[in-house]
Length: 364
Image (cartoon, rainbow, N blue to C red):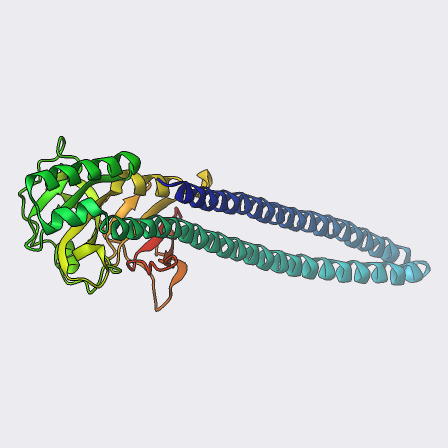
């Protein structure tokens, strides 16, 4: 991995960490507000119950006073009026206390609902941002693959062997490809093919016996053979490559052209096999979603096939349903209440991306 890519990786990882820390702060604030609201609601209920208890005592005292005044006859008539007024005041206070309790309960209930909705929205938006971090980091990584293949396709040893695949030229280009692989550890192998799809040389002949194999049927070779110039590139889907021990790879190709000139006639195809699984796993497992979220981080291709997963499950077999609705990013909850957030590939510089998505599946 180049110094530039390591720097970009560190930057995105830092952004992911900051997003996770911010999310924890937001979660703490939301929890605090919800707790304080619940406490206010509890205090209000307790106090209104105390008021009702006091008014019940006032009503009882007023009733006793009325009974005593009636026994006193005419001498107790004035006291009876006061007792009745005390009773009326007690009833009014009781009515106010009940209304207060009802209104406070409704208001705090609405507030707690709003807080919960705000927290859900904040969590969803954070998950979308983390989805973007994952797919953006992969875009930046793969952008460099497009640069590598076009650059190495102009290497003099590659061009010479494609033009005249004699034994000496094959030995020389194989050594050259091995040197490249020694410096760029993200690749499993590099293949030089002729225009009929025959592999003429590779960089790891000691590990992969691919020379003489024909790859004309593959998607990536067909696309590479039709490239218009040396400035263009072709790419295949994430796949298990039988000729490389069934390892998961993404193959980037460029046409080898006469004299190494971009507009000259094609004389071969250079294919570089990106060692997909460990690189992708590092990205999805590096997204800090927070332990409490218990979320699953995915990379999904344009056919909604899982091509990377933080839990290592469903690779190249599972397909996910995304609530796109014409959007490039967003989040929603399924019927079980589980969150799913996504962001489509933003591309990077001249790399437009492959229509992939960063996806986070969260717990309910």
